[in-house]
Image (cartoon, rainbow, N blue to C red; front, side, top):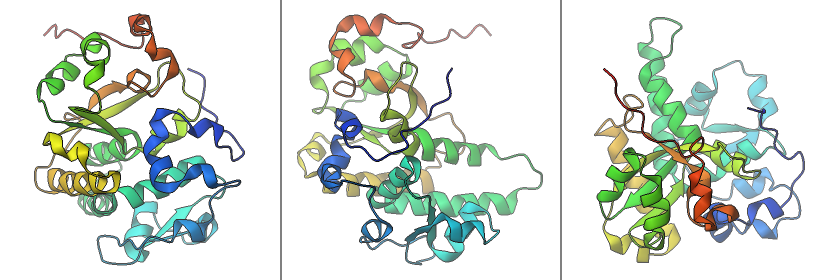
Length: 269
């Protein structure tokens, strides 16, 4: 697969699709004529797991420090942010949308590093990183969605039940790498879904309230239910199949590409 190369310049035309609807609604990205500044990103009051104020800083300060990335954030509250960089910009927005969960992931990395006895990363750290980069939270009020997704019933979830999206299921991007790559969507782009059971009335709340609720639920699921002990709770999600996230998926034939919408692999053991 061709290596993904992000746009080198700021542009808002790549942020108009449905995948960016939440960011546009909450952060008004279309108002910017250039990259959002650090001062604009720092207008929100956030704290890390130690209660230190989160501050998005120039990456050059971190490069001179010598500490590991997660350690630096945990011990200082400062989040290194590369200038004119989509990946880090979206990472800053995820901190603002899921502050409790992001602080928890940071703390768990530190705890796992303390337990590490060799150079090999633990299954938990791998799961934490995968979630941080690639996760999409699928909030569902009907548990039948979970079964269908885990069985790769793509026709059912994306075509037959298309009209139920936003009513009994809704997608919330957590992985900032997803956002970065969705600026230039390509066939093969796949995230990792984590399911959260919710009451249907959550979808009637304002968007900020939805994110506060999901942040609290995610924190509970990760901290108390240990859903990221490994990758087993994360399911593949072809991102371009989500209704409204990609223009071509209005045609049901789009989902006939089994190289992208892959059937569930049979267990031959």
